[in-house]
Length: 194
Image (cartoon, rainbow, N blue to C red; front, side, top):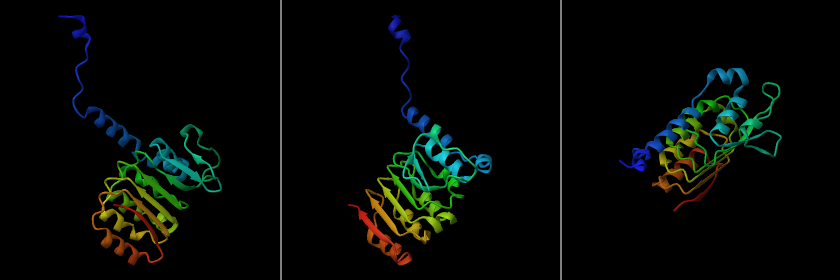
């Protein structure tokens, strides 16, 4: 037998790399309730979001925080998350418990988030602090979002602006948006859908 044949690695089973990344992303999204108690909800959520590839912006700061190792330090509760940009991140339903203690989030952008699905939007809209604080939400190119997820947003009673783009799972546009507009009459709805 030739040396090259002996040294050649067997091919990986189909989908094994994808399964590994899915597992790793699930690990990144695991909620650590002890950590939330130890460092506060905003710091713990910042760690989760940055670990998953998202960005956060704190109250009073124009700068987006993207470096996990550069997270600001200071007294417990000093830095409050005001905005979340989850573009190309791996956030998923499993980690949404981190959002529960956030009281100052006014703006969330979910773009190209492969794990965002209807249950995530339902969970987002059931988070009491976000029902009070969230004013702007953008959902773009999240292929697992359907009409059901968009309708679930009706519980975000202070939502002023909703931008929806490239969401192929939305099939009943007119009905979905009519239901949403009836529930949230002050909502400015901007659509860029086929």
